[in-house]
Image (cartoon, rainbow, N blue to C red; front, side):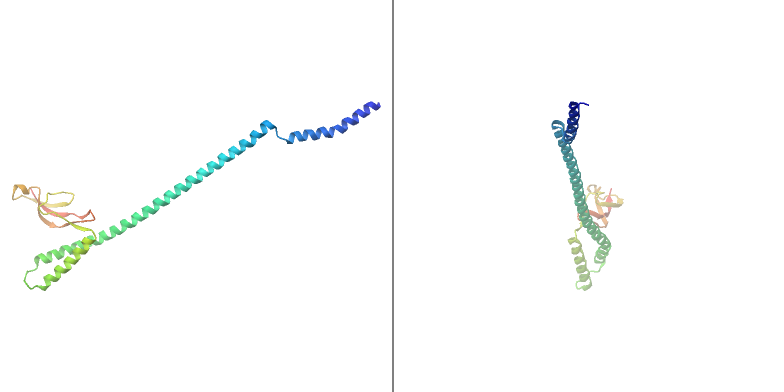
Length: 192
C-alpha cells in the first residue's frame, strides 16, 4: 500500500470517533421545533388532569357538606316532631279525664256551701289552664254549622226550627285541637 493511502485510512479512523460522538450528541438533543411542543402538551395534559381531579374532589366535598346539612336539619325537625307527638299522646290521654271532670261538675248538686264542688272546679280549672298552655283549644260546636273538618255527626234529628237545619244542636263529646291540628273531633247531633 502506498503511503498516501495509509495516511488516508488513519485519518478516517481518527475521525470516526468524532463522527460517532456528534451523532450521539445530535440524538440526545431534542429538535427545536418539535421538542418544545411535546413538553407543553404534557404540561397542558397534567393541568387538565389536575383540574379534573380538583373539580371531582370539590364536587364530592360540596355533596357531602350538603348531605350533612340536610341530615342535621332532618334530625332537628324529627326531634321537634317527636316532642310534639309525645305531648299530643299525653294530652289525648288526659282528655277523658277532662270529660269526667265536666260531667262531675254538671251532675254535682249545687248547694251554697259545697266545698267538694269548689275543690273539683279548682282542679278542673288548673288542669284546663295547663292544657291550654300546651296549645290545646276546644273546638266550638254548639250552634255552629256542621263541618266535617271539625265535627263528627253521631246522629241527625229533625230541627225544631228552619234556621237550625244543618247546625249542631247538641254536643255529645267536645272536640279539641292541639296547636291547630285536630286531635279529637267533636261528636255532635245535627239538625236536619
